[in-house]
Image 1 (cartoon, rainbow, N blue to C red):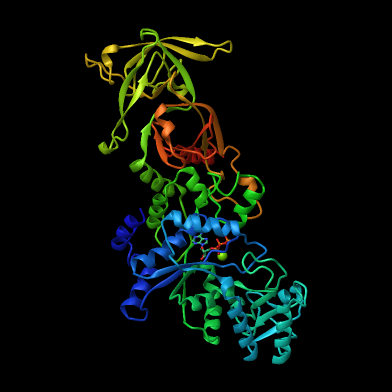
Image 2 (image 1 turned 90 degrees about the vertical axis):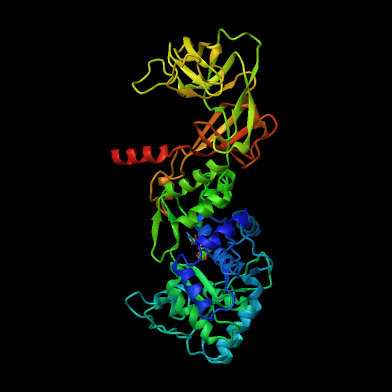
Length: 568
Ligand code: ATP
Ligand code: MG
């Protein structure tokens, strides 16, 4: 699968967007010998589809231009980072089809070197220890329109700075007592250059370095230097880091680093009906709004995997949306298009009745069972055929029957003849109702001459419906998901819960599946004919089969939602 992707990527994707153009120009001009990129996640949550854009870009460029891509954990904030996230990120990058080979790194591997560079800056008079409180520092930082004020500690002597910084490292001071700042320019129009914090005191256990460190570098101080250590040639990140680039360059220019990487920014992915902020995703999990990071409603790679979305659908989607330099929001329907495309090609067809209505065929001999042939994939003869059992008692879909049919309803109704897929024509003769007047059973007759689905006299029926044999069907729970948010642009951090879709999960506990589905594998997609794409969920156990709907066949949800929004 990964090879396949590589082969097509070479031809189609090279030189397709402004970043690839930059890389190509650098290689052509000899400014870059071999392109080296990195994907630098902070292990404070699971990867989401926005990260997939960054992964496909960084790993994709390395593959297409004969370079390499590193996986580097940006693990500089031990209060939020966990081993579980590290493991999940590795699993998800691999699942997406990419491989970092031996190039797995951690910013924490560089803590000692980063520390020494900080001392270099102090010795050069370019960094100082600031004792101001956080509030005072914030007040002195100025605003977008007004410059900041110098700290009273800015002109501390080098020796005093060194002594204090070493004592910070030794753990002599409590959290927040002091910070190390770069001495850049408090009057700069770019707030990031107003003496940014390089180190803060944090007495916390780090997943990798344990209790060794009592101070931790800021993102800005760690990131560019990690790039330089690893020989990254093109450090590609999202647009919100554009204003950090002058600082990135300041560190590279003022430190004795082994290489001089450049930073390039692209627009992050935003999707309608979706929140891609790790903070919100974390709150969804912690607040039990979902069952976990891999809940099929989550926009995480783990969630998509569990939902049955194949990795090639995600890669295809990322390729289609391209890489641009201004932010925009992509219609979730575009993602669904890629998902349907991928699933349509590979999913075997099966029959499943989600809301069963019993059918008894009165003229079919009691106890008789016959086997009918059904194709596994209409466009792929190599997928072969299977035998399906037919008998006197069947289940059809409740919604395929209407006692009083509407004008355009051509399926089952009293007196009407329809085709049972792969089987026979049947005619509804009578309804059985319960005490509440609900139809609980249909009494039908079949035409033995219509075996296989055609009548010898050329008579037509207007509908073909799916069915399963009552005696042979597997009882299953089917979980149908719709988007977690009911607004195209859900509120972010503060108010997201107001926009949660209360009906994002529908559980059908009485579904009946054709017996071939005993062979279904977890996360492997199948198409339930006329219904959509589904996969076996890992909650299945002996005696309980659970299927998850990956996606419906058509995009009915978005249409309904548009209608509803228009009506509001
Ligand atoms: P947060 O959601 O809290 O802002 P983050 O998503 O930026 O965090 P990181 O782990 O730092 O978390 O992201 C790793 C890389 O993925 C970064 O280079 C970041 O620019 C990129 N990335 C994150 N979100 C998106 C997105 N929506 N689209 C494209 N790239 C993204
Ligand atoms: Mg980030």
